[in-house]
Image (cartoon, rainbow, N blue to C red):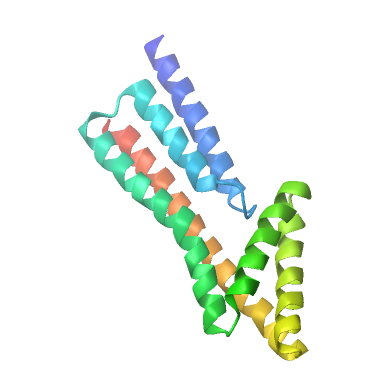
Amino acid sequence: MESLLNISLFAIVQIFMLVGLVGLIIPVFPGLIVIWLAAMGYGIAAGFGWWGGVIFALQTIFMIVGSVGDNFLIGATARQGGVSWRTIIGALLAGILGTIFFPPIGGLIGAPVVAILLEYERTRDWQKARQAVFGLATGFGLAYVIRLILGILMIVAWWVWVGVG
Protein backbone atom coordinates (compact mmCIF):
# COMPACT_ATOMS: atom_id res chain seq x y z
CA MET A 1 0.00 0.00 0.00
CA GLU A 2 2.83 2.38 0.87
CA SER A 3 4.57 1.86 -2.48
CA LEU A 4 1.28 2.59 -4.26
CA LEU A 5 1.08 5.90 -2.38
CA ASN A 6 4.68 6.70 -3.31
CA ILE A 7 3.98 5.96 -6.98
CA SER A 8 0.83 8.11 -6.86
CA LEU A 9 2.70 10.99 -5.20
CA PHE A 10 5.49 10.71 -7.77
CA ALA A 11 2.96 10.74 -10.63
CA ILE A 12 1.01 13.72 -9.29
CA VAL A 13 4.13 15.79 -8.67
CA GLN A 14 5.54 14.84 -12.09
CA ILE A 15 2.30 15.89 -13.82
CA PHE A 16 2.33 19.29 -12.09
CA MET A 17 5.98 19.78 -13.00
CA LEU A 18 5.29 18.95 -16.64
CA VAL A 19 2.35 21.38 -16.63
CA GLY A 20 4.72 24.02 -15.29
CA LEU A 21 7.30 23.21 -17.96
CA VAL A 22 4.76 23.32 -20.79
CA GLY A 23 3.29 26.48 -19.23
CA LEU A 24 6.58 28.28 -19.78
CA ILE A 25 5.44 28.72 -23.38
CA ILE A 26 2.81 31.21 -22.18
CA PRO A 27 4.60 34.46 -21.29
CA VAL A 28 2.79 35.27 -18.03
CA PHE A 29 2.11 31.71 -16.85
CA PRO A 30 4.32 31.15 -13.80
CA GLY A 31 5.69 27.80 -14.95
CA LEU A 32 8.78 27.88 -12.74
CA ILE A 33 6.62 28.70 -9.73
CA VAL A 34 4.32 25.76 -10.54
CA ILE A 35 7.35 23.44 -10.72
CA TRP A 36 8.66 24.87 -7.44
CA LEU A 37 5.27 24.46 -5.72
CA ALA A 38 5.11 20.84 -6.90
CA ALA A 39 8.55 20.22 -5.38
CA MET A 40 7.49 21.91 -2.16
CA GLY A 41 4.34 19.76 -2.06
CA TYR A 42 6.47 16.68 -2.53
CA GLY A 43 8.75 17.78 0.31
CA ILE A 44 5.81 18.34 2.62
CA ALA A 45 4.19 15.00 1.72
CA ALA A 46 7.30 12.80 1.59
CA GLY A 47 9.59 14.74 3.90
CA PHE A 48 12.47 16.96 2.89
CA GLY A 49 15.39 15.23 4.59
CA TRP A 50 18.90 16.64 4.24
CA TRP A 51 19.28 16.11 0.47
CA GLY A 52 15.74 17.28 -0.16
CA GLY A 53 16.42 20.50 1.73
CA VAL A 54 19.58 21.17 -0.27
CA ILE A 55 17.90 20.39 -3.58
CA PHE A 56 14.81 22.41 -2.70
CA ALA A 57 17.04 25.39 -1.82
CA LEU A 58 18.70 25.04 -5.24
CA GLN A 59 15.29 24.85 -6.91
CA THR A 60 14.25 27.98 -5.02
CA ILE A 61 17.27 29.86 -6.38
CA PHE A 62 16.49 28.65 -9.92
CA MET A 63 12.86 29.71 -9.54
CA ILE A 64 13.74 33.21 -8.29
CA VAL A 65 16.42 33.77 -10.95
CA GLY A 66 14.12 32.56 -13.72
CA SER A 67 11.00 34.38 -12.51
CA VAL A 68 12.62 37.76 -11.89
CA GLY A 69 15.72 37.69 -14.04
CA ASP A 70 13.91 37.24 -17.34
CA ASN A 71 12.31 40.68 -17.13
CA PHE A 72 15.70 42.26 -16.48
CA LEU A 73 17.20 40.33 -19.40
CA ILE A 74 14.44 41.42 -21.78
CA GLY A 75 14.78 45.04 -20.64
CA ALA A 76 18.58 45.03 -20.84
CA THR A 77 18.59 43.55 -24.34
CA ALA A 78 16.02 46.08 -25.50
CA ARG A 79 17.94 48.98 -23.89
CA GLN A 80 21.10 47.90 -25.72
CA GLY A 81 19.11 48.29 -28.92
CA GLY A 82 18.15 51.86 -27.96
CA VAL A 83 14.60 51.16 -26.79
CA SER A 84 13.19 53.64 -24.26
CA TRP A 85 12.13 52.60 -20.77
CA ARG A 86 8.62 53.83 -21.60
CA THR A 87 8.45 51.38 -24.50
CA ILE A 88 9.82 48.50 -22.41
CA ILE A 89 7.28 49.10 -19.64
CA GLY A 90 4.45 49.63 -22.14
CA ALA A 91 5.29 46.40 -23.97
CA LEU A 92 5.52 44.50 -20.67
CA LEU A 93 2.11 45.76 -19.57
CA ALA A 94 0.63 45.01 -22.99
CA GLY A 95 2.07 41.50 -22.81
CA ILE A 96 0.59 40.88 -19.38
CA LEU A 97 -2.82 42.39 -20.14
CA GLY A 98 -2.98 40.77 -23.56
CA THR A 99 -2.32 37.36 -22.07
CA ILE A 100 -4.89 37.88 -19.31
CA PHE A 101 -7.68 39.17 -21.56
CA PHE A 102 -6.88 37.32 -24.80
CA PRO A 103 -5.11 34.09 -23.82
CA PRO A 104 -2.94 32.43 -24.93
CA ILE A 105 -1.55 34.68 -27.69
CA GLY A 106 -2.85 38.13 -26.74
CA GLY A 107 0.38 39.06 -25.03
CA LEU A 108 2.49 37.79 -27.90
CA ILE A 109 0.61 40.14 -30.22
CA GLY A 110 0.05 43.05 -27.82
CA ALA A 111 3.64 43.52 -26.64
CA PRO A 112 5.25 43.98 -30.08
CA VAL A 113 2.38 46.11 -31.38
CA VAL A 114 2.64 48.47 -28.40
CA ALA A 115 6.46 48.49 -28.67
CA ILE A 116 6.48 49.45 -32.34
CA LEU A 117 3.81 52.14 -31.85
CA LEU A 118 5.54 53.70 -28.83
CA GLU A 119 8.95 53.68 -30.49
CA TYR A 120 7.53 55.15 -33.68
CA GLU A 121 5.83 57.88 -31.65
CA ARG A 122 9.16 58.62 -29.92
CA THR A 123 11.48 58.47 -32.96
CA ARG A 124 9.15 59.07 -35.95
CA ASP A 125 11.21 56.41 -37.73
CA TRP A 126 9.70 53.03 -38.69
CA GLN A 127 13.16 51.43 -39.05
CA LYS A 128 14.07 52.32 -35.46
CA ALA A 129 10.65 51.17 -34.30
CA ARG A 130 11.17 47.78 -35.99
CA GLN A 131 14.60 47.54 -34.36
CA ALA A 132 12.92 48.10 -31.00
CA VAL A 133 10.62 45.15 -31.58
CA PHE A 134 13.58 43.05 -32.70
CA GLY A 135 15.44 43.97 -29.48
CA LEU A 136 12.46 43.02 -27.34
CA ALA A 137 11.95 39.78 -29.27
CA THR A 138 15.63 38.87 -28.92
CA GLY A 139 15.51 39.46 -25.16
CA PHE A 140 12.26 37.51 -24.87
CA GLY A 141 13.68 34.58 -26.83
CA LEU A 142 16.83 34.48 -24.73
CA ALA A 143 14.81 34.73 -21.50
CA TYR A 144 12.52 31.91 -22.71
CA VAL A 145 15.47 29.61 -23.36
CA ILE A 146 16.94 30.38 -19.93
CA ARG A 147 13.58 29.78 -18.18
CA LEU A 148 13.16 26.49 -20.07
CA ILE A 149 16.65 25.33 -19.08
CA LEU A 150 16.00 26.31 -15.45
CA GLY A 151 12.67 24.45 -15.49
CA ILE A 152 14.34 21.32 -16.84
CA LEU A 153 17.10 21.62 -14.22
CA MET A 154 14.48 21.96 -11.48
CA ILE A 155 12.76 18.76 -12.63
CA VAL A 156 16.04 16.86 -12.95
CA ALA A 157 17.03 18.06 -9.45
CA TRP A 158 13.71 16.71 -8.16
CA TRP A 159 14.39 13.34 -9.83
CA VAL A 160 17.75 13.29 -8.02
CA TRP A 161 15.94 14.15 -4.78
CA VAL A 162 13.50 11.27 -5.30
CA GLY A 163 16.36 8.93 -6.21
CA VAL A 164 18.51 9.68 -3.16
CA GLY A 165 15.60 10.21 -0.79
